[in-house]
Image 1 (cartoon, rainbow, N blue to C red):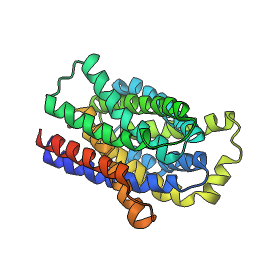
Image 2: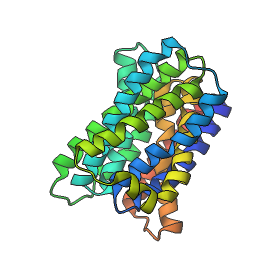
Image 3: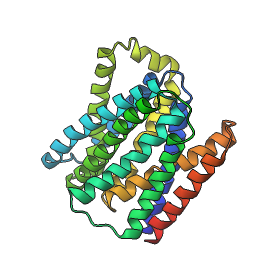
Image 4: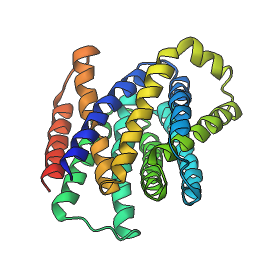
Amino acid sequence: MDTTVFFVILLATIMHAIWNAMVKHHPDKAIAVLAIVLGHIPLALICIFYFPLPGKEALPYIIASVVAHQGYQWYMLNSYKVGDYTNVYPIFRGFGPLLATLISIIFLGVVFKIATLVSILLICAGIMFLGLFGSKNQNQIEIIKYSLLTGSFIGLYSLIDGYGARVSTSAISYISFSFLFSALVFPIILKLNKHENIFSKVFKDAKMIFWVGGSISFIIYVIVVWGFTKAPIPLVAALRETSIFFSIFIGYFFLKETINLKKIISIVLIVIGVIGIKLF
């Protein structure tokens, strides 16, 4: 991977860890996720004003992206209902790039070096290790099911947005339109599923997540989508998910969480995978 792309994506992963920490510690995950989704709107509107329209070739990808993001957000919330954040989050974040890699190889004809494949697998394994092992939750089968469904949509929207950005006149306006439409659809899904007073709750209990988390999330994904246009999508997707690595350290230094053997094994696997991506 090109050095500039590599380090820019790594910078994005640090920012990714910050907004995820904000969501992690909010008591109402539905409101926290909605605050992120709605928080994309201000920067998306600014980008649409300043950047050229994405072009008609990108329209099918934008529609598919919106659908895939709704699936991701909905199944993520269902994952949180059956399992703890620390149990489900690593599983679906690790499975997303793994699925994107498999689809790319089997259906899209993408060829990777063996060393690159091993590096992607190490990163995915290191991330998923945190969620798959060590949990004593009796709902582990349900946790894994919903987490893998969530991860499937992550893999899908990564591929959709990667190819959509490549055919678009502007990758930034492409993702801006996708996020705007997502921000229109997701509140409807929550309302249909009996979530009440969602807008007032966002601006009463999650204003910081809306303004700070939403803006950070938008900037990160713009960087990631730009990365999709410069390097193989599964490679960028896997590197992006190393935010788990930074989340562990944020938890340790700022949230008083412990670092145990499971986290150390995860860190080692992720670091080896990241080094492999850069070298090969």
